[in-house]
Length: 213
Image (cartoon, rainbow, N blue to C red):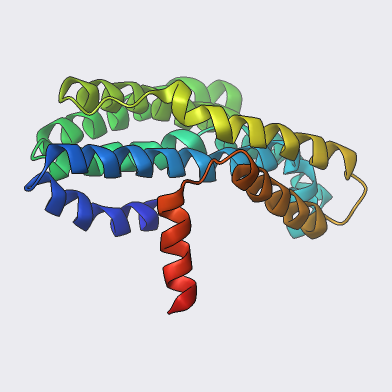
């Protein structure tokens, strides 16, 4: 998410000085694609956490499966939180981004102090998840207040439908090799996104231009 948003940020900054409508268009598109990318990754990590841990490490790390599943839940928030933060910087509202970051950091420290002594690394994972959710709520409030409100339900609708297919494939192909499951799920997800027109003509034209070059 950091690299994706770094790529978008210069365009957001440039457009913010030219046209609010164009800035909003790019922001909405970027928000949608952050959701579209984060959702299947989150789902895959939650459903395949045990397979992933055992594949890359060993049975000795099996107790970390639950921590990976909890942290996977933060991904969707992390993807869009970066974007909303960079939007605030682009429209010269960086103080609000600084405020949300400061509050989130303090909250995370407090939650760690409260949860780690009792729940160990599981508590740390929950502290991260809660902090990112609170950060999302603040950033969404700040961006909406500055007239850059995104319809979250609209952004989630098509990726959510495609994600149902991913869940079905992962469950149905659970006995296959981990890499095969991931590859087939990814292919099915993006095929479904194309079928339900989750990617518009503008994006297809951009992809065609890259392929042409």
